[in-house]
Image (cartoon, rainbow, N blue to C red):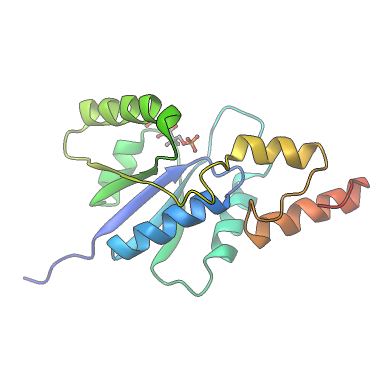
Length: 169
Ligand code: PNS
C-alpha cells in the first residue's frame, strides 16, 4: 500500500509572520512531505493584521513552494490536527524561556489526544531573538523591521506607515 504523504501542522497566531517562523517552516519542509501553516483565527487579541492579511502574507512568502500551504483553524488544535491527519504538530523552540510554556501545551494536547505528537525545531541563532510581539512593538513605534520579517510583512508595514505618515521602516 502506498504511504500517505507525511503532513506537519505548524500552528500559531503569526501576527505577523517573522523570519524566525520562516526558518522553522524551512526546517519542517526538509523533514515532512508537506507543511501546513495553521493560522489561529480567534486569538482574543486585537491583531496587527487581520486573519485574511496574515494568510495572504504566508501565501506570498511561500509562493512557488508546493510543499508549504496555509490554512486557518478555530477551536482545539488537536481536533484540527486529527482532521488533517497530521503526522505531527511542529513548534519552534527558541530558548529556555519558551520551554515551560511549550511543554505544558504539548502535555495538554497529549492529554486531549495521545495520538498527536509534537516536534520541536530550534531555529537558527540569527533569528532566535525575533518574536511577533517585539515586531508589533517596533512596527508601532516606527522602528526598522528589515531582517526581522519577510518582505510581504515589511511591505504592508511600510504601506500603513505611508498612509499614516509613519517614519521609514
Ligand atoms: O503563535 P502562538 O500564539 O504561540 O500559538 C499558540 C497556539 C495557536 C499554538 C495555541 O494557542 C493553540 O494551539 N490554540 C488553539 C486552542 C487549543 O487547542 N488550546 C489548547 C492547547 S494547550
